[in-house]
Image (cartoon, rainbow, N blue to C red; front, side, top):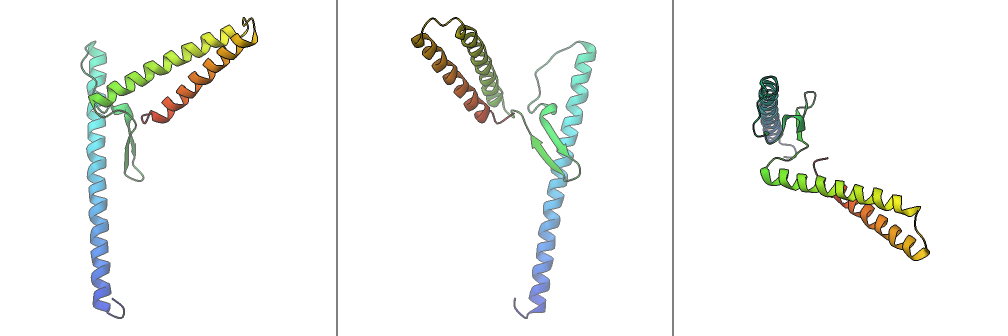
Length: 141
């Protein structure tokens, strides 16, 4: 390419085509996500207004984050039934851990000796550690 103006122009043209193709793909993806989000928001509003129910869409429109300035589309929630089930399990387990932490915290003031205090503190440490792991594993938060 060095010194070859025709080669340089061809490379520049090729890069411009690739960039334009990428922009067009991003625009189509953004428009599709926007259409999906708006359609489901309207359908869910109709359900609420009419008092009807139905299966939740996957992904849920509230989980679709659109940035019109950049054309970026992000999905912050589950996209499949399996992911939704995993999310539900994680959230339920998270609640159990919070309840156990609260119960153990209440027991701290009533601990009768150092051994009991150690057991309670160890339990608190374990449940807090589990909560941290859940937070790291929860890709939808």
